[in-house]
Image (cartoon, rainbow over all chains, first blue to last red; front, top):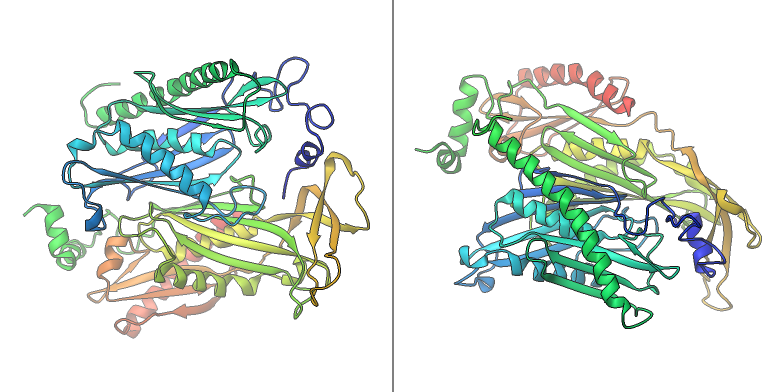
Length: 262
Length: 292
């Protein structure tokens, strides 16, 4: 069922119902406009997968598993000179309060899977794994906005965990636009289909853009650059957390093999 | 020969050599079940949820609730849908796409064991007008064997964790403030003529009504291998076993049923030793579930 506040939003939002930005300049959940939600993650959450990560961004929770490089399921998809990256995006039945029949093949999931596939094909050194396939499986357990962002960040961690060679690290962040203000990493309350939202995936070291998606139009021409700036700064915040997590994980791994002393 | 290669080529012989030394490949003794860990209410969007870990086997269960019109044949009964999904991330052998035979069998197994314990008339808001429809979905995210037990326990824990809001049918839309929310349910016109009507109800934001599930099934599974019994099998052990036997208990410790899906027959003495082991474990499992 929709939370109580959703109703007031549908009746007019903004001034009439819900205030997205308080007089102090804080958002509904108390964040500043440039602040991303609290991130918690762990690498190697699953035992059977070659690489996996559990990732929480606020109340959005995703689980990502990576299998491969392994032999492709079908001979037809084999590429003799590189690996094929496949991605599957599915959402749990109970992930959002409003019941929507979602399955792996629905339009939104397919679109999200394609975005991820394209983004990661660009950074994985596919030429090092000819005639093989790398599968990325995403399961969204709870969606409080930004499921794709969380999935991309988690997939980066899972690929690191699987030891897949990559040229760079993909970090994603979204920017919403409410009450004439840009808000980084909008929650489900702050995002609506009629409001502009920019989802950006950047390569953290080279600062190149891996994927950029803008839904709905922005108020004016200059605001796209501003939105990009906000998204990049959000992605940088997220990358710091992910980098810390990867370093911690690797150090623990080295320590457990007696290669470094912590 | 390399250990991993040997396991791939002679899986039975690999396990047999371990068992001859009274130890299992994962270091357990034959009578030692894996540690069970249950956490509930971690998914805020579900009315009830549970995550269960049994060794490395992991299942996530959640219940989604919607208000619907009851079925014409049972006007005062709620509706319970059960589904089990084996995600492709759980095992390298699971293919994506449609539900596999295994998933369908597990769904049926879970449904038949859970639905008798749910009081469907508790899910009724107003007979003939409005009832709750609960959708229990159990996702297997990591399969390291004994899915039957893991999925059933996760399902039971999630159903026991369910808290529903109080619902009241009202005539027209009024603003109830922040503590309540409006729900509109479209009624279906049987003749298909006239305007579609809808029932308007208010549901409290606070959820307090539990399903009060006092009696539920507790499963304990064994496999038979070369005249030996192994409690709580891992996936490698399951793949080479001769047969499988599951005991189902009530929380009070009484035996409720035995499942033995084919395979070799179980000699009387082994059956008895399984039963004794199972009875010892039941109080522990029950305590784990009650503690949530």
